[in-house]
Length: 504
Image (tube, rainbow, N blue to C red; front, side):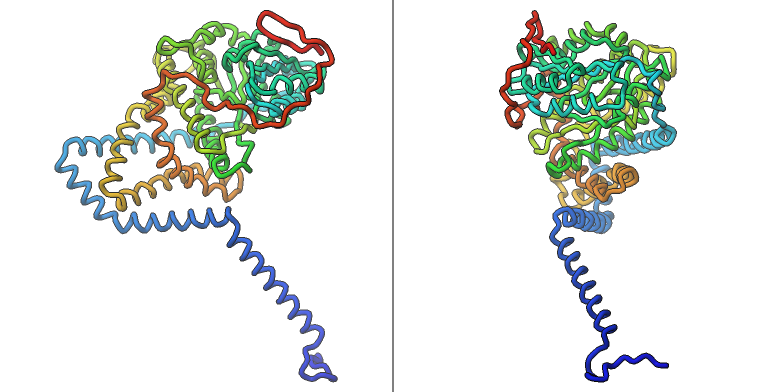
């Protein structure tokens, strides 16, 4: 029998089955249109689509001008000896960079984090949280520390207010009452710098391992266990670097770009440094040290100077150098994760990078004093290679930057297209790593960050090189947090010669 497809009462009307099909097609079309308009008006999609289009346009321009650019380079090379030397230096640097990248890829592929230890093997651990003008944020940090999967009987938590000008001390007192018996809080009478706040914590530490956590950071639940476990596996380890990720991704494009950059800096770069037992910087946001090793170098660390002035920046890189110099290994624990807040604006970002770059100059000089000696019994070749690779941007980098600016001003379209294309190619590795690890299209932001760094941040290294003698934290302003409840502490404060402490 053939299926009836025409209504006998209305020969021209569709059957109910055909009406259903027509309605479904109409709904499907509406959904497609809705999705199209959503994608067309979504800022994130528009940004990434624009980036892909710009990369393609730059690639076309680079190919189109390739012949003319090379001809121009050859003419300059034949005419000017200085340009010939510059080209040779650039080619040599490119070869060194390629070889270093291949070496690091091999190390990265071999890296594995240390296995987490059971409760019985974990040592007593002291966590120090220094705070300055952090406001309510310090409470969230301390909550995340106490909530960690670490035996409470083996965990000491210390919060230190470095003479904040806002209500940080009120929030620390609230934390001491809320987390009663789990947190000790102290207050320096005046602001003396993060190094002094950490020193106050180090001097009160009872643990075999001491962990430092920034007051604008939040730990994952298993972070402390994973961070401390390498000390149990290897007595030669004196310091462990945690894995820092960005907490305030919703604050704008800069934090999202930094999230891509941080993943490459930690998951790739520090894992390769860990394979040669010489992580060059344990981050202030999350790091762990053997207490007895810290006590050996504590006085020297506190009295550190640069150009005759007391050093009040780069305390994390400085203590890493001292631990390495003592012959201990410093490694990276990839699965010990902390989420930290980063600047969301350009000015704040510049201040942060200037502070880091100045510290890098100072501590690279300090590291040169012992790295080329026999400072430990285990192999040191990898440490020396990484140090030499870090010196190149500081020494050759400024010359290359000036040459780049000159070429860009001379031939803005031809050389500019090549420069953008080269930066995009250089960003391929961070983008691929982020896409692989996070399965996110934010990997495309690696290209945006490379261009942003090139045109808006590349001056920082040169500026920091000539101002390395200057001190100043630069980024700690008054925290824009709501005022803490003005309630009196449940017990009176106990005053001391240096610190104010809450008794709970």
